[in-house]
Each structure stands twice: as structure tokens, then as C-alpha cells.
Image (tube, rainbow, N blue to C red; front, side):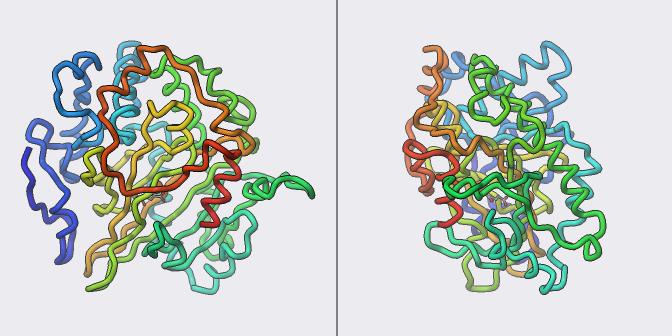
Length: 398
Ligand SMILES: O=C(O)CCC(=O)C(=O)O
Ligand SMILES: [Fe+2]
């Protein structure tokens, strides 16, 4: 393992990348964003977990690369078994993975990526017309610098959208039930076709998110039914029974001498996040248990999938929510864009009361991961005590 300086981003300042990027000579594609995907997509080397435990003195949680899983493996019985094996490794030891060949139409992914700069280039009045301040559901536009992580301003401009949902709140209901409701969209005239494209995309990612939960249950030797209480309408809810959120985010290049905090170190909240990196920039970094920041370089045609704190809590920490952050592009660079999808769980469920039971051999798999060492993120510690909707409301208000 060697630490190399890799000037991969246009612009003059690559300090933050050089300090955290490692080249793994056994798996060179793990660390280079430009060696994908034909070079990278040989099966990820995930030996049976007991073997890996015996062979590796290094805790598995000190990963130096993010596994790439190929959804097309699921087409055969043997491939399916391989996928689930690789998934188990990623869920327990890394908390992040790339999903290649996802079941989402590539033309819809590409169309959404093409719309992204146009969305931010809308006239400021059109963006302000759908400001988040108008929305009891926290949907809409937020100007650059409107969000804080760990008390420090995030240098990002963003739109919060979501899957279609009619608000159910009535007087006397808990306030957190207001969180789900209709998103705000730019007018059709200002960006023709955008709303339909984004909705088409969201429908597919929502479906993928449920299928992924089924695979996760398999990886942990749980019945799919075990996860049904976390979703309104079972593990495959009909559209409209629940609401999931998406964002479209722009990280402008930082100015000389300014903060490089695109978004500060944090955990995601719910169950699964599916992130589409919408430009070819480094910036997203993932923290291993030793506290090192590992680049999650963009790989075209993939989602970056990671796990939220609610999932970590209900799986007794077997599935990892991993701390991550985004560094702003260096001065002189073009902006970085990304499109995360956050899978929600039922608002009324109290995570602390819903912890899943596992077979002892599954619980033991945590042992090879190593102890949590230095982790920069703090949030979502309230899951033990409150309904998930309330925890989300705290997150929004923060
Ligand atoms: O923009 C990204 O790549 C990641 C964003 C993120 O982690 C978040 O919004 O929770
Ligand atoms: Fe995140």
C-alpha cells in the first residue's frame, strides 16, 4: 500500500485529495476514478468471511477501497449467491458500495444528469419562487450556504424533491407527520420535461430500494417479513404510501482561501441512500474505522449506495452507517453535481423498540470489523428514543 499524489482534478489545489488517496497495487482500480468500468468490474474479491477473518490481522473496517457490486450478477443462481456474499461484506465492513448495472434506465439517469446544470442556471427568481421556506415539508430550493453540518456552513446549493405524496396531517397529529407532502417543482415552462424525467427516475430508484432491502435481508439470513414493519404497506409498498426524498446538489469550486466544506462529516439518517454522482469530480469521501478518508470517485453508470443510522440501529450495528463528507472542488474547477435519493422508513416507527434479532453466526461477523476508532460525524443519536419521523424533523430543523 502506497500513498501517492494524484492530480485528478482540474485546478491548482489537490492537497485534500493527495492526503487521503491510496493506491492499492493489488486492486489498482479501487483508487483511480479513470480506470473504470471495464478494468474494474472483475468480481470483487470477497472471500468467505471466515477465511478473511483468519487471514487478515487488519480490521476489515479499515477498508481502503469501496466494493463494486454488479447487479447483473443477480440474473443467475450462482451470480445471485456471489452478489449476496459481496453485499454482506460491504454492509458489515464498509457501509458503502458502488452498484453497477442498476435496474434504472440509463437514459433516465443520463437525462437527469443533463438537466442538473440547467436547473441551477434557472433565473434566481424562479429558484426563489420554490424556496424551501415556503414548504412545511422542507421541499424546494436552498441557496448556497443555507445548511450547517457540525456548526459549520456547507458550501452547496440544492433542491430537495421527493416521491409523490399527499400530506396526511390533521389537527392533533404529531408535527413530524407534516414532513411528508407534495414537493415544489420548477415551472414546466422554465425547464420542460424536467419534472417528468425526475419522477420517472424516482419511481425506478424507489423500486430498486425495496429490492435492495430484500437482498439485505438475505445477506443477514433474515426473512423479508422481518423488515416489513419499517415500511408502510410491507417491504414493497405501492407508490404513494410512503415518501422518499431526493436532492439535486451543486458544489461550486471554492475560492482561494475559503472553506472546502461542501458538506461536513455526517451520517445519513434512514435506511439506504442511492447517490448518482452527476459530474466527473472527486469530492465525496468515506471514513474508515481508522479515521482515514477514502475517495468515492465517480464511476459512470453506477450508484453509490450507503446505509443510514436507522438501519445501523435496527441491525444492532451489523450494517454500518459510515461517516462521509464532500470537499468542494478546488479553485478554478467546474462545479461538482450530485443527486442523492434517501430511502425513508415509516414515520411512526420507534427504531429503539424495533431492533431485529439475528442468528449468533451473523452477529459474530461484526467481530472482524474492528472497533470504531476516530469518527468525525455526530448525529442521529435520537433513534433509540423517538419515532423515526420525529428524528427526521430534528434533522431538518438542525
Ligand atoms: O453529494 C454527495 O456526493 C453526497 C451528499 C451527501 O452525503 C448527503 O447529502 O447526505
Ligand atoms: Fe450523506
